[in-house]
Length: 66
Image (cartoon, rainbow, N blue to C red):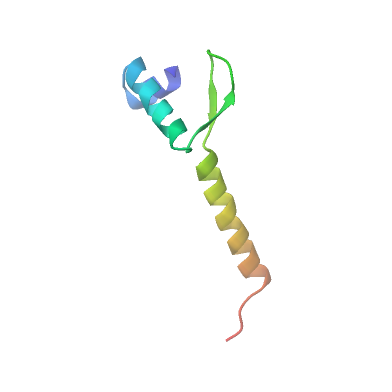
């Protein structure tokens, strides 16, 4: 939370709420399940990036003719 507070320039409650909202929406997923030094993964963002990469690689390997 400390890093989020510094990055956004907000209070602890505001940073905590923002992280909680993103977690509720499924955008972030808690990786480390401790109350301190929590680590989150941007799950939905990573999924979107990997899906896009799969499409690009598929198109490169199977170019359409015509």
